[in-house]
Image (cartoon, rainbow, N blue to C red):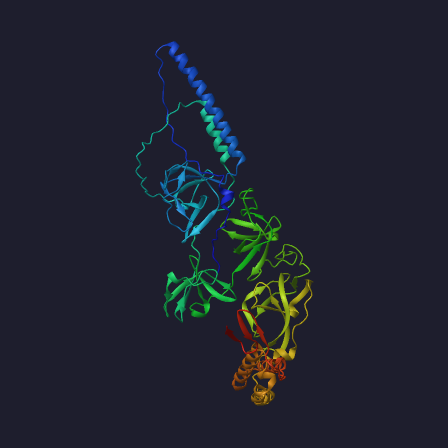
Length: 543
């Protein structure tokens, strides 16, 4: 099951230069003339101030036009400022002043959206967010997500006063000009619809893990028979996990599906180039804001915009598909004309191997069992590390497979590969080796191993063992112990028996003990003024 919302993680440095602008409400002040001279002076003064204000407005507008504007939003409520965790930022500062609550009618610049605990938020830069429900207008248009609420402004020791200016033709023109420069075409409708979850029941007590597969001890242990809800699935270090939200995962092996919804693995992509973020119409959200090469994101969907393929990585956020390679999960683009990039952003280097699939195919595990969810589309390029035979029970024979670089536990059938580029691979075993790996050894298969074990006593009494170096004696003892365990095992495979026999014979051949030679000689003595030392006997006699 896929998450419907994802956040594009943007470098804080890219947003540092953009600060929210909180505007003050201005009222009119009428000036009465006492006499013609005073009126003339006040008029001249007013004209001068108006001229200065006009210049200031022009400079401000010019300065803003040079900077990335984002979406122009206006608050319809007194609004808290939130952190990415969903907690209020009580230390949010604007122009050096702490402002945990922004006033109604405040004007800000927003840079994309994020879903936090099921609610939609707008980013205002530097890891700070405003709830979508507190925003009255976006780019001058009514926000359908706006909901009126009452949030009291915090009490401060400073008195808030409204600045007053005279309504003039110039000030109207200046305001109109300012609105024009901050407007931006809205091409994507935002949605506050919560991500769907799937219900499942735990069949074991389960630990909670983070995205790296490390246990989160503070989350405790989830009890057996508990009903949990998860958003999607993910492979972490080759094992399947269920995503519970808030960065928490449980192992799929601890849960049983309750509904009949097929489990589909999420697709993850890795940027092979720096990439601009686009909206649903293919327009850059902010041409100065780029995601860095090497970043990894979940691909929620793929579609063509003006004839080019894009991956969706967040609400109203898309990147060009030619800038990213699929590193996990099924391919989302099945267009045979689309030339999917590799991890290095181009053709494989001489030290790497990349295969292109000739048909839609599912991966296999090392037991020759086909996956029901991890699917790659025809034409998809994928990096591989080795070519090996694996016994396939469903076909009762050994087949050749390529091992995936992105998932060492996953394999692609050789027959499903169209082309190979980069370093050629030679098969590293035989079809018989693959069969031996799954065939349980009989007494006949163990006969030679048992014979080698039977002569161990004579080997350990021989000078080649007794006079061997300590590390080689230990190596032989360990190989003998392992061989005995294999010989006594009822589940050991033919491959296990062959490996045990090979290790034991090699360990015996490595023993380097030889018979010592005996020589008779008289001990020599060395006399000094201080003492007499008798060599070989290590005796020191003081005078």
